[in-house]
Image (cartoon, rainbow, N blue to C red):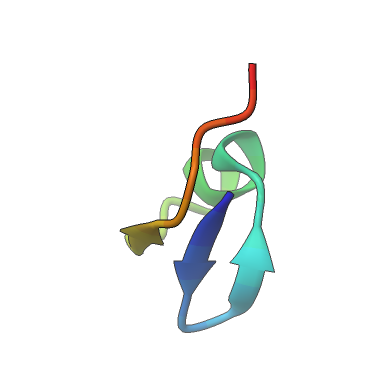
Length: 28
């Protein structure tokens, strides 16, 4: 789960939107 300027989203969503963010935790 990554906290970005667009809110909290999953890693896949963040990569899809090409946004960076602080990694809160990894969900496998």
